[in-house]
Amino acid sequence: MTPLPLKDVKSVEIIPTWSLILAIVIVLITIIIILKVRKKETIKFNFKNSKESAYKFSIIAPKYINEKNQPLFQTIQKEIKIYKYKPNVPPMKKEDIEMIKEFFKYSKVKIKEV
Image 1 (cartoon, rainbow, N blue to C red):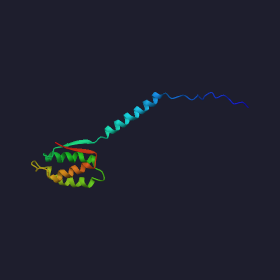
Image 2: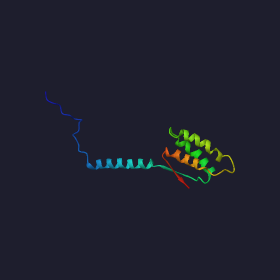
Image 3: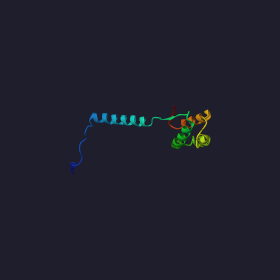
Image 4: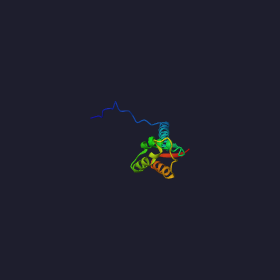
């Protein structure tokens, strides 16, 4: 019995080298974009204006709550109530400022004092 010729099978083709280079470039560009997106976010706080800082923390912080900083978030919320809801508020205590900074250390956020 003689072997039948294969009609639908193509012969092996050589992949051009430029396609390999193109694939490497695409992968590198994708990695660079991902690293830039994951860069730490910066939030500006004016701790001299305690009322504004307290409200800003209350609005921004819930986005960054995780297992590590959940109890700290609740503590800060209780502590900063004195800076809200009143027309005249005292300056923010150093302990409260440090707690806010500590809260954001656990997330990928950088605090910048204005």
